Amino acid sequence: MLLVYTQKNTPRIAYTFKQICKRILGIEVGFTSKIETFIAHDGAKISYGKQPLGKELYIQSAELLFEHGFNDVEIYVQQWEETKCFFSCTNKRSALPFDIFAATFYLLSRYEEYLPHVKDEYGRFMAEESIAYQHNFLHQPVVDIWAYKFKTVLQTKFPDIDFKEKDFAIKPVIAVSQTFAYKRKGILRSIGGGLRDVSRFKIREVLNRINVLLGIQKDPNDTFTYLIKTQREKKKKFLVLFGLGDYSNFEKNINANRTEHKILIKYVADYIEIGLKVSYDAIKEMLILKKEKRRIENIVNRPLKSVLCAFYKINLPEAYRNFVGLEISRDYSMGFPKYMGFRAGTCTPFMFYDLDYEVQTPLVVHSFCFTNQALENIEDLEIAKDEIKTFVNEIKKVRGTFIPIFSNGLFGRLNNDRFWKSIFEYILDLENN
Image (cartoon, rainbow, N blue to C red; front, side, top):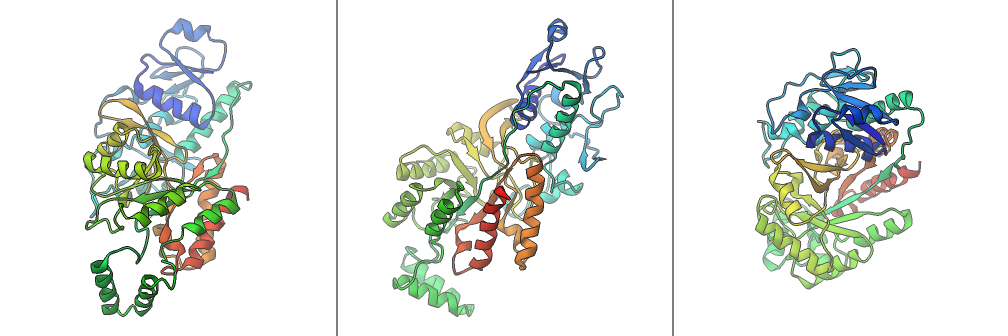
């Protein structure tokens, strides 16, 4: 066990050190504010504060982990070997040139998203507003990189310390906004969709719609047999998140109560882990979220564990508090849909920390690395694969988790399904390559 001495053990300190030490590096960590206890400990130990106690391994602290609430923190990002960091240390005795714990807390708590910022048309925090984008480290899982630099310091000082290595993993997520492209939309929606395709001279779509409605061909969004088959062949666990919100300007899926819809969801749930794609309105309305949660639980007869917010919109802290209140344990909304990278600076799942209440919650945040939107301007298959492999290699170095998000419709005839199937299967093969 690593023992950390600090004059005051705050919830922020416990949260951050446990993330770096236990969840990333695989070592237990304890805390003390008693000098006698610290001196008596004969194992690995460090002090964290403004000044060292003596000649122990020491890391100089910034103020952030001793504060409450949030303030307009001044951030000065600097180069640090192959990466970037902030909250630099001025004391030459510090074993690290930056307070990686304060910097980690700033990123994981999404501190910057609580501060004034410009939102996009959906009310989302934009990548361009983040320090990671502005200082060109969005492409790196900096928290994990910092953790491994800390590991090197610990190994040098305490060569007998035992780290439990975690394994690199790939966790594909399939977001289902529309279970079917044409089927079960109702007469008015089908006619309206057909007329719209005709007005836009989309003759192929018109013919596809007619053939699907006549039962001549399979609905192009019904790609679930392919997903089940691929999961079995690749021996890789997927996560499929179904949207079950009521029809609105933002939600276009078929009625959640349609028998065929329920049967299909049950069928997928027999083979693949499923969850809920939270509708746009449910992100901010607890009663609507409860209704959607109840819908999917009634269909599969098991508690809802995993969610993804529509349009990747996260209203902090309200949306996450609602998830916690409904005992939803895993969220996959943390990322920027149009950019490959790490919104929270990490490729390791972490607990949501509520800055208003200064408490670590049970909600585990799984930060995704990219969605298909990030590749929409890349038509060359090999270039797309190279882009993906670059990010995977960064994650492999720190034994993190690579989470790509795809839409079910990408693997159907309405899209360039050969391209997307090649990308998807290429990603699945990267875990062992």
